[in-house]
Image 1 (cartoon, rainbow, N blue to C red):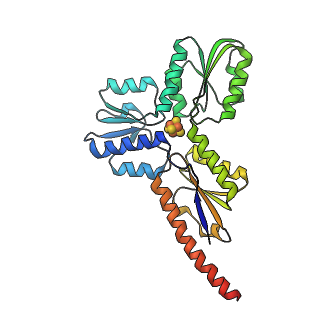
Image 2: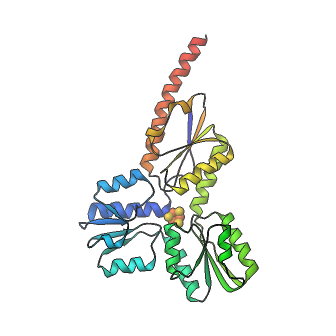
Length: 295
Ligand code: F3S
């Protein structure tokens, strides 16, 4: 029969759980019109659920004239918060406390005269927000050519990492900065949950025949999780919901590993596991029939 094993660390992280709880709470108890600034999490099913509570998504503060605006876990630049307050909107700030900390460290470095360097993805809202905390003065290092933007010599520099950055990327940035700085401060703002999730996915992938990775197709961390499993050499399927499961994957398979991205709600993980339990039972029946036929 099939054995289904869930990774030790899978699904929502602390910051996303918190943002989701705050938002669901507001959806149920707040009489205001409620908006989230951008989709709360990169998961279409969860976004649909929020829509069901009447919570709408806007791209800009400009689009809202009254009501409550929710800041998601990635955070926003300070001027966005000010804009919302100036418009007398109710602001529910669900920025992850770890992200807030990165923003504050960046702002403090900037004020103390350090050139702030952010190791992260330029387009990512979290990085955009951290950049905003330095009044746009920080330099973001995402790829090799970004190093060319750095001055030849920097007296005082401070490095901040996007919370989901890989430690290897951060180390590369630290290394390169060492060569050109007199004084270098490094804030390791990488959030451990990402690493824990990836490590436990890789550990599990080694043990199983196939891996099922659950999460939005648009979720960067879910895609990365699938990559990690492939890198181990295990056949890996990235799905969004139980409906994406294919029976064909489970023939002649004994052990299935399951993990999920940081933006994947628990109810989706449960649905997938229970659908696989069903497939498992049918497979068991088929196996018994085959055994009978062989006899
Ligand atoms: Fe926060 Fe870490 Fe999640 S920074 S949003 S707990 S990945």
